[in-house]
Image (cartoon, rainbow, N blue to C red; front, side, top):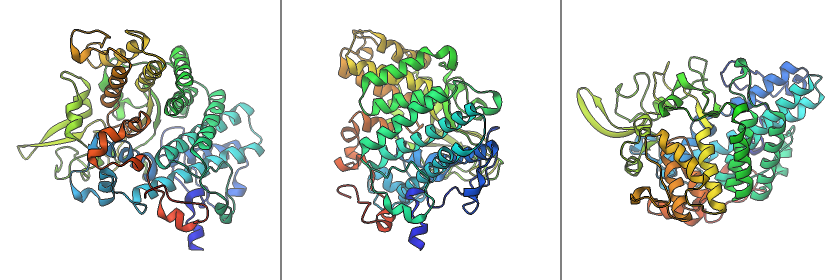
Length: 487
């Protein structure tokens, strides 16, 4: 029975007593496995059930820690410089992670627990007597969240079990094997399309932080870009850009105004994972996680510096001179006991935690600058146009950073983008420094087929574009779950 109870690939724990995402709209949802089937009777019950889906994004295997490990540390953006920061983290960083690595295991389990919670909302709400518009909105939110979790799973592991109904009996879990990447993406697109139709562009103040129509559109555009469906990506992203009067999204005048607890859920942000300090485990860990080991109170004044996600020398050198984003994103030294210590570290998530690993900083999943750069990429992939619209969107981001525009025939070779291939590299560069330490770099390099070129020196081999399936899942269900090639 122990193995059956651990069959987390399909959320065997049901909807656990998870805590909320901590913002105003996210009240606690104390739903146990024992009473879950009898719990969902009212609109308030469904609100609490939906809260649990948002809450799953806070899990260690999701945005609390896994995304920055996989999205940045796996890439050339960041690294582990101190072995005391964790052997499993080092293994992901060095491409030596195996099927028993805790990062992969936690990522798999946390996402499937969240997917089970989303499935409960989508299924159980159908029998609840409540306002039909609110019901449709709750389903749309749950489908957006389910799509986001499947999008992360399929990009990390490749073929994964596709579970879109509630698992009520542990034995049902054995029915699910790995589904093809194509089928998983088909479900993601279906979920996001339906979410877009039922979600509003904006909410009142009490509901800030919920998934919106704009979030569904932005993620759908990213999905199409990942699949190299460039016309579909461009169309959806342009629809979102053209809806700015309804979404209120904009590029903030100052890059520094995007980040930090005081700036969360701003006009550039499209979707954030909500965290709140001093709320029984609802705080975020990033301020402590990203401070260098040995820095004492010089970088973070409360709690322990853990030395994770340390910017590489290559990342430091990626910034152009006078790029205003650099000092907002990272630093190269700190002063401890009157002495200057040369050490790179991330400052996008700086602040004063209420306690160790307990900060207010949210994690931004989607923001408007990402949309503009994705749109520029999608346009270029359909055909290079010298100084065309793709240049305009690229240069909006550069100009906000205090950098001159790039053109097709610039006299400065560093600003000249004469063809499609050069524009691809220009977008890659801009995404790297604009979205630094936000969990995008690894996924960008995989999407553009550039990972092996840039990371082979770090240890990457061709089969490592996806992670190994956790061995625990193969052991539990060996007739249905197999390992990825060459692991």
